[in-house]
Length: 479
Ligand SMILES: Nc1ncnc2c1ncn2[C@@H]1O[C@H](COP(=O)(O)OP(=O)(O)OP(=O)(O)O)[C@@H](O)[C@H]1O
Ligand SMILES: [Mg+2]
Image 1 (cartoon, rainbow, N blue to C red):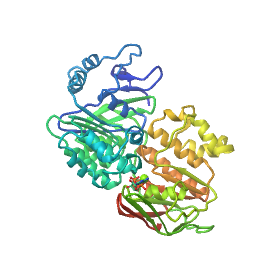
Image 2 (cartoon, protein in one colour):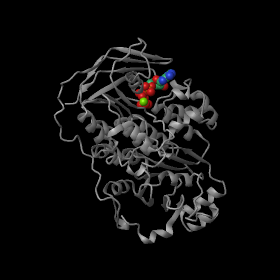
Image 3 (cartoon, protein in one colour):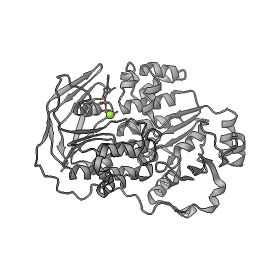
Image 4 (tube, helix red, strand yellow):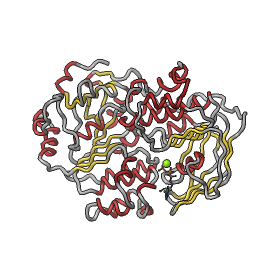
């Protein structure tokens, strides 16, 4: 796709020579929730950071000192000018929920209750704790929270602040489905006079439910992004799915995104080889206990793991991985295992080095390229440092690293977090194929039903009482 010539005048920010450029900005409106959609690497977080006052836009002038008043004047006569003027004179009270919540425990210490008490505006705490179902977690240390519990804490902290402008970057990552909709209605509940909200998310159902208007971002990931809108909610979502903006006559994707239900089922009943079995076991923490029922998996199985937040899914994966010991001290005997944790840890190395080390000799083969590098779009990341990747990029590299190792058992904890719709689809295909071709056993924890439905041969449903007591039920066949 070529960049329309007339866009050049709309350049808002450029990170450096030949670096990413953002054209136009979305804007907030009083009394509404503005939704933002677009694939990864297309400038959504950049735009939110500009609107949060954390990044000063340079209008493409790489030498000059950016000046917000000047930028505001540039958007003369628009709602954006009004917003940026208020931002410049400090009259907005902004509360920002960053995209990457897994960094929170590194900088914020203490118990959930203490953290919220420090942040919350007078009188807001009680209601927020209830909205996000945090009551039973008030005495829990932030570093032991499950992914969904941590996201709820981050959202609660954002909404509890004394602010009138809320910028919320990816609220639904790590949340289970019920919590996604609870969070969406909690966000809507803060609307009122003078309150503005902007939310960006990859879950289209959440955006549909949450937003009053939608901006669509398109462009080339890592190269440039263009903001288009605002559109009505259904119209905006439709434009994103179709890859075409009628009002601008721009086609930004050659194919439509269609959600297909389960692909034609392949013969997976190869119940040959040796099953992988695990015994009944328990794992107790202070305030939480997981009970695992005995179960088994067969070669080629992708066992999808579903259940609410804080029910012990990650704990179960850690038991299989040997990262945690069960109360009985049981040690599982697997010959080889490859594990992608819920929060991947970047290392200070080039992506190519990381993948080469994991893949070994096969790294240079066409088979490996076709199996992992191409479908996950990793070619353009090879000479980047792993520590400098975005959350979605890091996720893809970590999935590729885990699947590059030759193993009998693959453990993938929430691979779809931070990925966009297209990336989720490709990743799911890769996981399924690698498992089948290598006759491996794969365990896949995820909250995205499309991912689970598309990848899994069996499902393990976790039940119990979130944050207190979980039960890992045996896998059941989907057919
Ligand atoms: N070391 C620990 N000490 C105390 N509690 C813990 C510890 N580790 C985990 N927990 C608690 O155990 C429960 C289960 O956590 P786990 O991470 O297994 O949940 P999960 O099902 O993976 O949830 P999510 O979908 O949110 O990732 C949570 O309530 C969590 O707060
Ligand atoms: Mg988890």
